[in-house]
Image 1 (cartoon, rainbow over the protein chains, first blue to last red):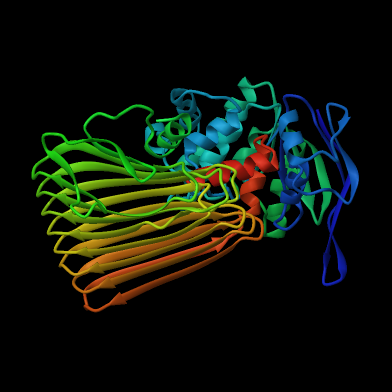
Image 2 (cartoon, rainbow over the protein chains, first blue to last red):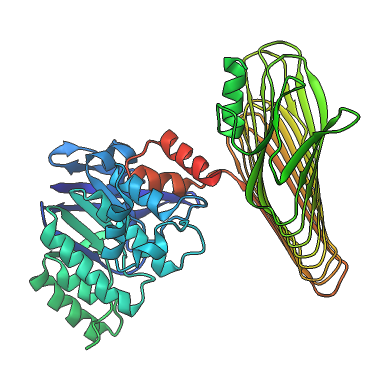
Length: 244
Length: 305
């Protein structure tokens, strides 16, 4: 189980302290799927980076299965079972898709084994396996490779920061299936930051973050109707309604 | 051949034993072994300054190995090797130089290679440079490659120098006739106080000729690198030069690409980028469980692959 206790995060901006996250607490139970949603700039990506260890909270604690991991490095957290898919995946000159998947899997997997992970995210493996993870890949392609690296790790906690961003509609269908499959098959917990109603519907629980604070947290059945209602009243929404 | 020489030979040529086909192995300024084949003739120059390699027209899928090794400290040599590649030939030439210097005097090998590539001939030229030994004497290599490619000819040049060479000045010139093409991939890594300078001058003189010069380098510690690339388009042609460099530590790198169009249909591009490893790249690999040092190694080895 992953638990955040009273996590706050401030940055200095023009000699003023700016609060990005303010006293955020929630639990990600084993084998649960939490979706985090809320307006842009509300602190969601910072939260994901804090879980992965890329940012250190100004105060508060992060616990993994009861162990305080607040001061552990990115590498140590990765080795304890936290995976993180970047919102904007990183490109590398010279590093191939196969290299990256092998590094993610943490062992010398066969080419066929690596290809399976690519197929899971809807990429025709033979076209991609030997390509470099460089700027020749489109935004959607690199995004799917990023998700494949997290699947290849198969850890107990997987954090995805807006996996739908940059993915076309056709692949989006496929992506939903990927998360459903991960949720059903793997015994692990998933945390997805998303603005998509379809993804929110797949989750067990929804956490809403706005202005650095949790404004709602509960079962999907309770939270989702209130989100749908809010948007129809306010006339502006921070998630995308499913097309029917 | 002693153990050190064998080790050098393996590092630069990838073999311990005498290779099959045509070869010329030069060790400490002397010819250690030489063999010509039915289509590839290797002969010493009359004045004793090097060798001539004649490859008959239409020779297909054959290779020539011409490694040079120096294990005697203080040895300095200049060697001229001339390659004549016949029309329609398709061959691989593997050159390389390894210097082991355990002494205090510097060792130096300056190899001047001339290539005359016939019509529609195809050449792959692989060159590896390597230095070893813990003596205070410098290991110096100054390779010079002069290339002429006739109509429809093609040359692919793949050069690697990633360890142990203290000082190097590389010079490559090429003149391309109609439809001729050259592709160069240079990979370089310098450590400590090493210096490396690489210069390219490519003249595209024939219609439809093309050149692609790519350099990837890593400068570590206090080392210093300079990259010059000069493409001249004198006909309807296409040229591209790219220098990508990573700095680690306090190293210094200069990149000076130059492109000149002397013809309205010359299409030329230059790209150059120098910088540290991007922080996000290291972070991504750390989220996969690598340490910071492992991530850095992985990024560099991929970059120089």
